[in-house]
Image 1 (cartoon, rainbow, N blue to C red):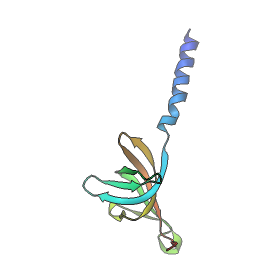
Image 2 (image 1 turned 120 degrees about the vertical axis):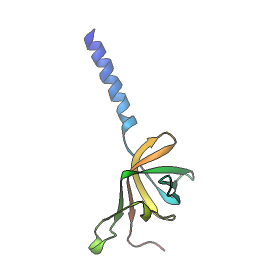
Image 3 (image 1 turned 120 degrees about the horizontal axis):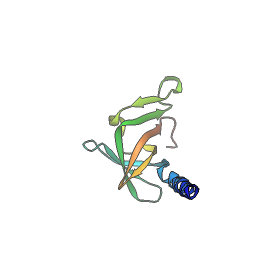
Image 4 (image 1 turned 60 degrees about the vertical axis):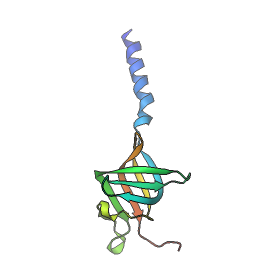
Length: 109
């Protein structure tokens, strides 16, 4: 009987693990809300997504420094029009960001 309970608990944990996995999203910043520390991203499917930026969120410019080094920034570096890649977790109606990264290299135009 204890084995069945243990098996049921392990099965429940195994099923719920993907729910806690982080997600990656990409898109262009449409707006920046400095008061709420959120940005709005225009996603690939045409819908907008609100992203919450936390004090521990890592903001990284890829190849933005001297000799192509990565640089780290604060919230004021995020500007509308930037194309960003975001790692984070869905949290209700918003997406909580762990890392926001953008490229500083050459662009197509």
